[in-house]
Length: 158
Image (cartoon, rainbow, N blue to C red):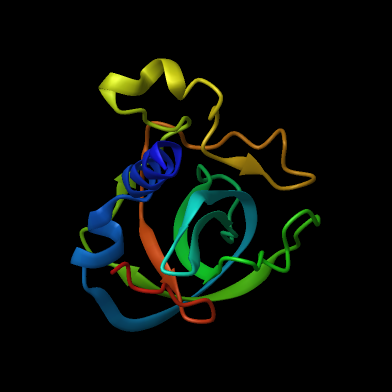
């Protein structure tokens, strides 16, 4: 039970409660073209749902600019996984709603509560690369805008 509670706390810390429940998404639906380069899955299921994030490299018209990334949060029933998981992804269109004031600094590793750092060593990296994107330089330590998927809605955390 303690391990499940620790996993749930880590999930909440990793996905940030402000991103899940306290930020109102914009009412404007944006279509962003890009490619999924990494994903993060929750360590536990809450209310029968698994909470995920995907990191999308936005396809810009000019290669002269530094790459732009967006983080998209979504949920699926606990027994399901995204259909694209484990496959090489291609450039596609995503229908998203921007979460105003929900941009966050992209973390590379899971945070551990101060009193249990020695128990969290096995958790490791927060983000897993998609096949074919292992050499992609992710913007760790940089602020990344947060979105919600229209096609994969985020279930509320109760």
